[in-house]
Length: 132
Image (cartoon, rainbow, N blue to C red):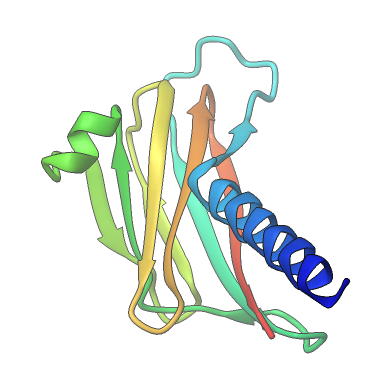
């Protein structure tokens, strides 16, 4: 009986690890549209924060944020825009084209995150690193 319980526990743990790994690969989609279909200037403002367990959010400076149009662009590091968040954890990209972008967020202590973003108008997006 003990051998079967151990095997079932091991299988359950393996399935949990596979599920968590697949969650990391699947980016979250954020669609932004405030109703203005033809804006003359599009601006993307990104705000980065981090949270430790139940402690309040704090600004996160030093996050390298790169925008890509395709997965292939990521593979060859052909970003559309790239810059680093300021001391307040903010970054603004001016004169953005409308469309879908893959946002790659990289921080030396908190790792890398990928998000999908659809820009249609002036946009403010917040991303958070959460750790325990």
